[in-house]
Image (spheres, rainbow, N blue to C red):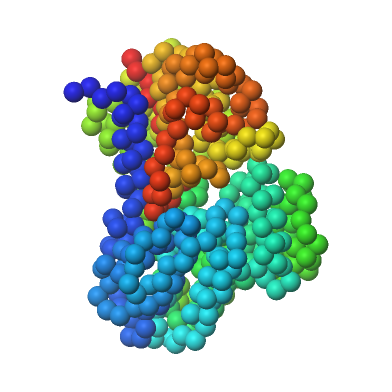
Amino acid sequence: MTIAPRDLLRRMFDAAIAAAQPARCVPACLPEPPKGRLVVIGAGKASGAMARAVEDHWPGALSGLVVTRYGYKVPCERIEIMEAAHPVPDAAGLIAAKRIQKLVSDLTADDLVLCLISGGGSALLALPLDGVTLEDKQAVNRALLRSGATISEMNCVRRHLSAVKGGRLAAACAPAKVVTLLLSDVPGDNPMDIASGPTAADPTTCADALAILQRYAITVPRTVLEVLESGRGESVKPGDPRLAGCQTRMIATPQMALDAAAAVARAAGYPVHILSDRIEGEARDVGSVLAGIALQVAGRGQPFTAPCVLLSGGETTVTVRGSGRGGRNVEFLLSLGIALNGQPGIHAIAGDTDGVDGLEEIAGAHLGPDSLSRAWELGVKPKDRLADNDGHGFFETLGDSVVTGPTLTNVNDFRAILIER
């Protein structure tokens, strides 16, 4: 039976999310039991589900605390799950970070800390350095989110304003051993960029963080400048002896999600081409570039022949200039649709695998050959909506939003373009 393009694209998105579920990824990566205690800590949108997977498969005693996004809590018996705000931190994240820091403050060399880290941990694990307030961190976060900075640049700044990121949490665990299970949501899967690297050594500096703020003309509170200019915000560097007992295990990545989606498409008879798992840049620019590739495939059979599916992942950015709600996946799709201009036979889906695109409880959207014509019939002007950063409003009006609810995982953006013969 032939699968409708829209249905196939959604099955591919669902397969990408399923491939990164902690229940599937965590058990095989658990460490050997220690001589002493096992303390479980963590932060991120997937940390609650990761904690549950640990409980379900750990053979001995354990205790601990992890913090996840509001709505992402799962029932656990021995590991406490706290919830906090994302992407802008709140007081609940501050309390959770203080409690986690205290949990690891009196460990011995016989103890083991199992740290469960996933995307979103930068905001959820919110413990500013002395002299920096939560309000200061919130202001910096909001400015970074609107600036167009890459995730690596944003996390560089965050690491140098935090009492737990940039390797500081691992340093606080010494002399205990630390095993970190990472669920990657960043292009390149660099541990120091996943949740701003609470257990990873950080080669970047306060000067690097200052340069990023200057590059994007971000005005920050005077207290933040003092921390960076004085060097007081310097993070834990490679070779620090406190990190000698640390191990990192990557349990799920964007590439794994793309591979799972590709298998679904191939089973339906479509050749698949994975373009990249680490595409960055302005979402609207990525949309127009991928539209150009799709049109070349459809019209000239280059660099691939139709029918086929083009897959990509990574993390684009949106520099918010309008009054819309942002959302990098819907901005990508709207730009893609404008550039395709109703080209027959090209369908697409884009969404964030955590179920939240930007600040919205919407994962992303579908795009079809008729999306623009349907919008015009409703009096909606696609280019005006793009200029206003209102991709969510555009696709909601068409009834084409993709809503998953909390997915309990996060391997970043997912984009699929299906080109029919």
